[in-house]
Length: 111
Image (cartoon, rainbow, N blue to C red; front, side, top):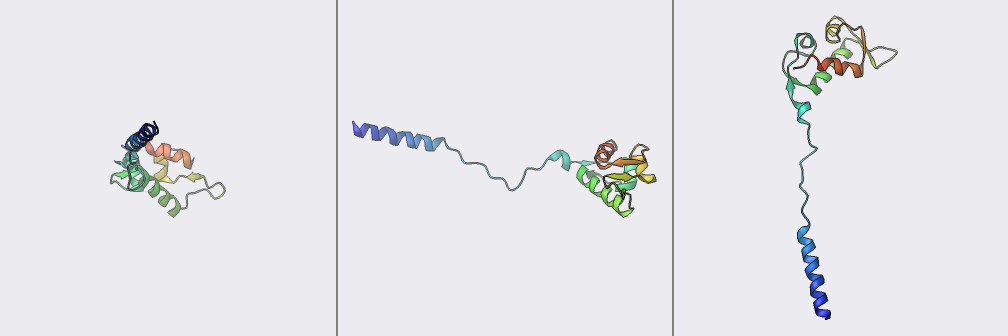
């Protein structure tokens, strides 16, 4: 009787081991292809970031480079951007835009 119980326990352990699957390993974090897709800026946005197709993330980076280079960030409230002639066309004629609204307005100029 003791031998039968021992055989059953051993059989259960081997059955459990077969069920366990190895986890797949990835090289790094999964990249969102929607952010990495190159989009064509229209003429208004192209005046600021260039006319070549760029991913959305690169467009935002280039915008910030432009903003800092031309000192368009508001000195009192750093979240606001004061538009010059080129950015006014991108910001739909608005004189001042906050940084969160900026990405929303820029997305309308990408195809």
